[in-house]
Amino acid sequence: MDNVYPNQAVLISTRGNAEVMGKQVSKDNIMTAAWHCPLSFEPQLYGISIGKTRFSRKLIEDSKVFAVNFIPYDMKKQALYCGQASGADTDKFDKSGLTKEECEAIDCCKVGEAVAQLECEVIDSFEVGDYIFFVGKILKNTAKEAKKRLLYRGDGEFTSTS
Image 1 (cartoon, one colour):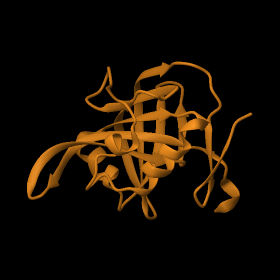
Image 2: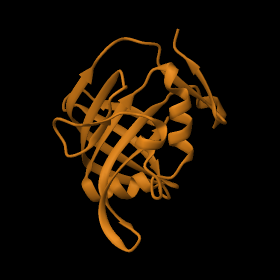
Image 3: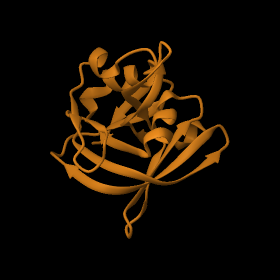
């Protein structure tokens, strides 16, 4: 599938219940994703594709919400880290130095450094091969400033918009 890149890299932020050391706790997480897309203007819908084995998938299935954080090119180091580390055993906000903020329309966190965010409530999901595709209804759409966006080229490589 190398011919589908580059795709805009985003950080998906999630919150949900997870088992940590035998206890159920509320956990925040962020993961990097390049497979996402707008789906509809009316209602406003956005889709994200998350691997079945990913910790974020479990959190989204538990909470039924997620935030899509559009990030600038200068955050490629954080994007790479958040795409490689597992949130099951680490606090990626803390380790990456990213700022955790509360969403306004959903019970979820978002990335403070993002140039735009979509706060989404899951209205549908379905299995697509080794991924789960989540359809989110956009409840809040926030844009801060125009900056060069981060694009994922595959194999851990990034580029930018012009």
